[in-house]
Image 1 (tube, rainbow, N blue to C red):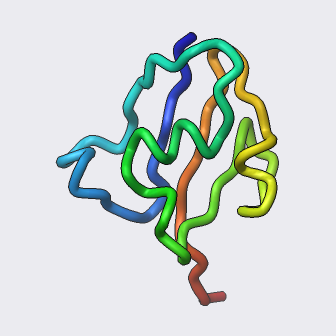
Image 2 (cartoon, one colour; image 1 turned 90 degrees about the vertical axis):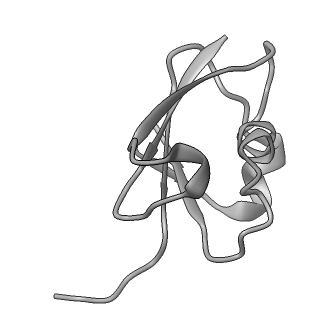
Length: 80
């Protein structure tokens, strides 16, 4: 299944200058599987949303993905 990963106000070396990447994952893959495949699952400051819904880190392993889902990755920031 294909899902999209988008970067919001961050850069990751694995993406180069791109802000979006399509991943081809096995059926039943979780958020943790996708982020592990990108090598970013160990980043403690990374936050994830799936289709605009926040997914707490503790739920990454048990949050299944569906075809055409979008995972948005960002780091917390302050501002106003």
